[in-house]
Length: 451
Image (cartoon, rainbow, N blue to C red):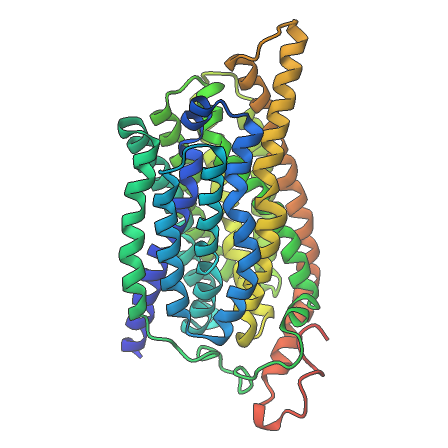
C-alpha cells in the first residue's frame, strides 16, 4: 500500500509540473501583450484575439484527445502533447506580425489540449473518491503556480531581454517534462473505485452519455462562464496595471503573478480540504462550497477595480482575496465531475467540459473585453473632442471594460446553485450503475447515470 501511495505521489507530482508549464506558457501572451501592442500598433481587440488563439484549436481537438485518453495510453498522449506545445511556444518568438503570432498560438493549443483530459483521468484512477478532490487540487495548483512564474519570470525575461527571448527560454522545461512523462505507469481504469461495476464500459455514444447527465450540463455552462473571466483577466491585468496604475512592465507582471497566481495555492489547498469536508456532510457540498466562494469573489473584484489610480495596497488586497476564492471552483467542480461520471468516460467528460470552457468561454473573454476596451476608449476620446487616441484614453477604456468580470462571476454562482440541485440524484444513479458487476449486467442503457 505504501509503495502504491508513493507511486501515485510521484505521478501526481509529475502531473503538477506538467500543468505548471501548461499555464506558464499560456500566460506568456498576457505578459508580453503591451510590448507587442506598441511594437505592431495593435488594438485591444487584436490583443484579445491573440489571447484567444490557442483556445480555438484547444477546444476543437480536445474532444478527440479526451476520447483517446479513455481508449489509449495516457502517458504517451501527454508526452507528445507537451513536446508539441513546447516547440510551438518557441516558434511564437519567431513571429514577424500579428497573423504569424496568431498561427503559432493556435498550434500551442493543439499540444495543450492533451493535458487536462489525460491527467484528470489518471488522477481518477490513482486516488479513491475520499482523497480525489485534494489530489485534483494539487494537480490544479499548477495553474496558479504557472501563472505566478509565467508573470514573474516571464516579466523579468521580457523586461531584460525582450519578448521574443521570453518564448525561446520557456520551451526548455516543457521538453524535459515530455521525456519524463513516458515513465508514468498506467493504472487500470477504475482501479481506485470500490464498486464491482466500476470498470464497465458504456454502450452507445459516449458524448450523449455525458451530456444527458443534468449536473454535467450545468457544470459545462459554468465552465464557459468561468473561463470567460479567467482568460479576460489573465490577459489584460498586466496592461490594466500599466495603463491605469502607471506601473512598468516588470512591476505590473509581478503584481499580476501574486494577485492572480500565487494566491491560488492557498485557494486550491484550503479549498480542496473544505470541499472534501463539506462533501461528507452534504452530497452537493462540493458545488455549494464553490458557489459561496464565487459569491464573495464578485464584490471583491468589483471594489478592487473601483480603487483610484495609485491605490495599489487596497487594489492588491481586494483582488488577492477575490482570486483566492476564485480557485475554490476548481476543487469543487472537478471533483463533482468525477462524482457523476463513470471511470471509462472521465477523459471524454473532461474534454466536452473543456470544449465549452474554451470555445464558448476562454475564446470570448479576451475578445469581448478587448472590444469593450476599444469601445470605451473611443467614447472617452469623443467626450473630450479629441481626434487622436492616446494612452490615457486606452486606460479609461480598459478600466471600464474590466467591470464585465465581476458581473459574469455572479452568473457562475447561479449556474453552480442549479447544479447543486441535481447532483445528488446523479450521484445515486452512478452508484447504482457501478454496483452491478459487469458479469451480471443485462444491458448498458438502463439504470445508468442520467437515467
